[in-house]
Image (tube, rainbow, N blue to C red; front, side):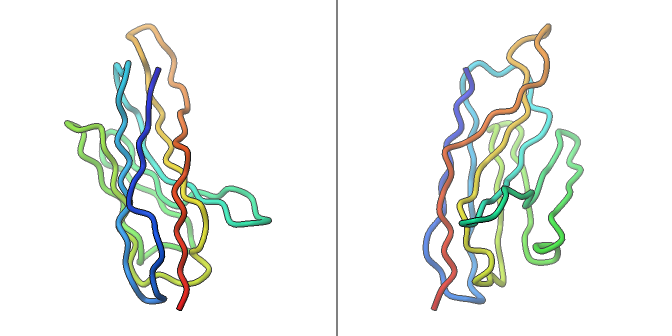
Length: 121
């Protein structure tokens, strides 16, 4: 099994910053991509940012220029630096990992339990 541990959520004022971390552990052969999705009350889950094993990134339109995703392959950890936060960024943020557990395994999606980010004055 693959376990994901998220950290770094909390309450921040508009214009502030937060940094999320997601550490993957367990039976991992390789990680293809790591990323963050978010879901606000009454809304669908949406992509925030994603980074592949070769460092390619893509971002949701609403966070481009404000959020930065990075990855430490040696630690199987992804980071999401969130700057210039807005109230509309308030949501539960979920870590997502696409990984293989063995050489003959297919890529599977794994999800963290989510961490709350609240942007409010």
